[in-house]
Image 1 (cartoon, rainbow, N blue to C red):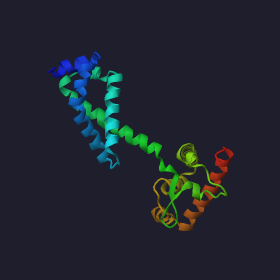
Image 2: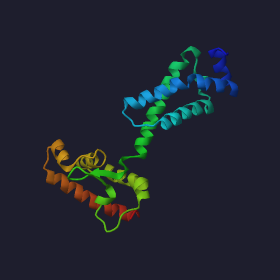
Image 3: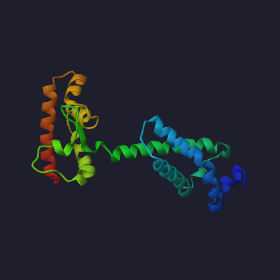
Image 4: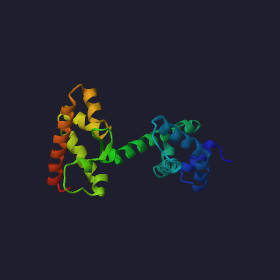
Length: 198
């Protein structure tokens, strides 16, 4: 069996047989680190997610020859833990961006609605737009709002807060919250219409 230094050196030199030994030896450490980081952030994941992230980590290390960056082979485990945790954080960010609210918001009664259903309209936007371009377009519209309106929209759309909860949180009348949300949704619809989403 190769020493750790020999193993790492051979992996750096793209020795596939060494890599075939390296991955099984360190997979448990990497997988455990990923699982730990996801759990710490209470991020839901499956066994397949863990496998995919772990495989992605090893693939990235191999393709970019990152083992060459490790100066002390005895610290390889600690280095892998850091790499794995960073990869888990990147995964959380990528999933959060991909699922950015999926265009849902809370209604006055506390129920959850798709934003398509609250944009006043005779027709619905396509579900594909809701999952992709529409989410980005809505995010841009929110970012262009005044600070108070932006906060109200984000509390409603991103955090599923009801009109009443927002009013209590911001210490403003519930009618003000409802009025801002209604007015903004109508404005959003007009902007989305101009941009060709509807």
